[in-house]
Length: 193
Image (cartoon, rainbow, N blue to C red):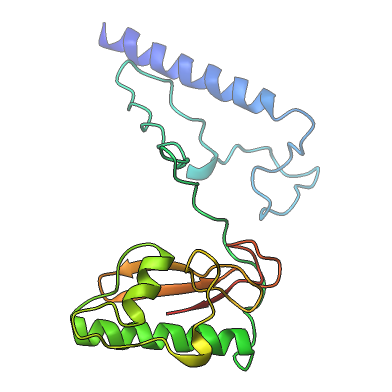
């Protein structure tokens, strides 16, 4: 019985090898690896099989399960827009007046956070109200040339678009201007932290 099963394994292996060898089709069959020199007519044919050229084993009943599918990409959640696409291209130059204005606003927000232990919260208009004196100390963090408001009391950039305030943490606030195209999350946006 053992001899019969060993013979069957040899026959199956040889049949698999012959099938694999036949599948190579129009490829050069004079050598098994590209690193071997071509054989001359006087050489005796020999079959050298390297570990990389062995046919894959016959599938058994004990196969490993396929990995679970990856989760789908995040999409918009109940009324919130999907995450913006990544920015491409260089950021606006550092000496740009819009960049300097955004940096000054972000600096004043950091000063507010240092004094009160965190960022001002709320909408653009609520943040502006807090930074212009509606806080516990009645301290003004936005004054003079930094206070450019629209009819809704929102702080606007030099193109007339409201700034977008995004709290990255309790003490780190991103200030974003939509830039000349007046569309948020595009290449010309000006950001400061």
